[in-house]
Amino acid sequence: MSNIEGLLKQHGKPDKEVYLDWENGSLVDKEVYAEMRPYYLERTFGNPAITHHMGWETLDFYMKAKTKIAKPLNIDPQSLALTHSFSESNNLAIKGIAKMNKKRKKIIVSEAEHLSVIHTAKSMFGEQYKVEIIPVSNDGTVNLDILQERIDDETLLVSLQTINHEIGTIQPVKEALEIVKDKDDSILFHTDATSAFGRIPLDYGKVEVDLATINSNRILGPKGIAGLYVKDGIKIKAIYEGQLSLEILSPDVENPALLAGFSKAAEIQFNRFEEIKNHTQNLRDKLLYGLQTSIGRTEINGPSGERRAPDNVNISYLGCEGEALTVECSMNGIYVSSGSACTSRVLMPSHILTAIGRKPEEAHGSLLMKINRLNTEEQINYVLERMPKIIKRIRNITGGIEL
Image (cartoon, rainbow, N blue to C red; front, side, top):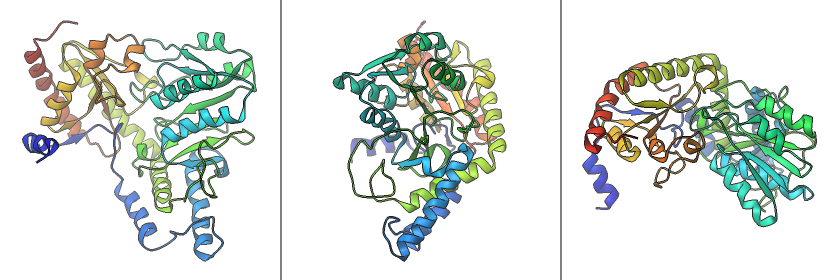
């Protein structure tokens, strides 16, 4: 028996389970799966770049599916490049622009960006690019005054999230875009909208960003497919080589089943947009209020009210250690992540929580919970009933270390 098998056997399966770790992994909605299945087994599985009946049939489906994804963004489907993940899209946005624009050598990002943006930007040091990291406030909002100061004639690209994936801060993208374009209209603006797609309205016909990243599995679509919106006229190059395909920026054999799932997930999410937003926001408020009022020595990470993503709950439990918390929660059937969703197996504090001023020990004692349309009020009630006991047990073990 492997160590992992032994751990699972020792853990057992709780009588009641509540999954709130949607940031790190998600299932596929049943309707989405039903939509995908025939594309694996029965129809439209051909290569849309090939000139025969099966290829043409797939091409017809391909364009209609991209239209469904593009519609809620108010963009031309032809401007949506399909990729294999949001990390690939973020890499493509930064490296692909740099490949086509050799004169300017400065990239600006915020210190609270996803690591796929920060690491990609920093990887450009070897090609003599300068990377400016803009600080954020104690609720995670990017400092627009400093952004304005750092823009100069060398600036090629600014990349700012729409919603922070960890603490739920809705960033002032429109205001940031105006600052950038008023300073120099030729500077390009990218936004990682991965955590915003399906959560808040995104209209790129009105807020004219140059590039935007979206993802499938954050709306209960399949993993392995994402998108990068590239505004018409923007010069960008693929970051790896491959065979001739419809997706010039991500050259590979297209996967009709994944695209069918992505488009169906988008259709469901936006057809029920207000219903889903109200549902998740109500459960978010219930969970935030309940945890804060029933458990002492807590700190909410991120903003409150309308400036917080409707699905995000992130709280630091002072006197606790995050890994112990996630294990104890798991023993009670509550599945969450600690510190940072991107570094959960590395004992380092979240770069986002330290960016907003949390001490390392406060960051380590944080839990991230996300809510989607599959979560119920009954589940949230169970979490609110169990969490005070979980925190009390952990604090008793650690002595409730004062921070």
